Length: 309
Ligand code: SF4
Image (cartoon, rainbow, N blue to C red; front, top):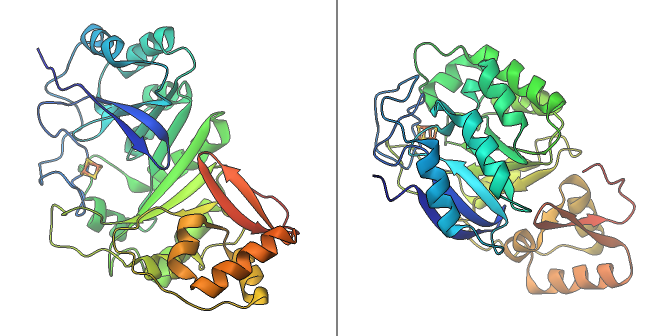
């Protein structure tokens, strides 16, 4: 009997009050062996060898589910979509969740499996990871199981975004010298422009990684965010390596910066000096800058900018 299936609730900035379900509570079972994984390195698998019963998960979930929970998050020590009874589990959760949303955090590889693709369509929110487009970069960072063809993953991510009706998030995790090159960012941008998504989170290594790789600073992530098309709903999600930048911005620079990339209050705290923050407040009061909420996060945007996300 596993008693560590449910964890949390955790108040997540990006997803709200989240109750987690670990679909591989005993040990890591993953079809990737990412360099940046916060779990120990492990041989990749394309199926779970140890599984838990749906009834056991539902029994545990019922004990912890209450009205304060915003999302039930399906996750795992590894890849949650390798759980063989995922479809049945989603159906059973739907029967008891009331207004609580369902969310899965997946590395996207199993979208090539029609059964998994269709199961994920039933969820209220889906977060797909997409670290690279080039085959060699993808393989270097995510170290996928030998049976996985990365080209197929990209086309399935595009297809999923066109079919899915819920809130779709994409997460790109940047690793120094691997996927932070101009060439790879351009390729990622080209794919992102084909997607219909709620939000794109840019992250980096926030916890000790499985292998000796380096993350990026907040400033580097911000510079990368400016290399993506300004119509994309990009959010810088990692703040562990954030050092206050304290830069001075004129009124015009504030409007231009927010025109290129809408920023959250936390971004402003890191990037702007005190005088610039005051100038921003005056621009808000004058109606030149507006606030826009995008699923749990509030962004500042120039008032005249068309609301593309
Ligand atoms: S997909 Fe997630 S669990 Fe699997 S190796 Fe990568 S980071 Fe770790």
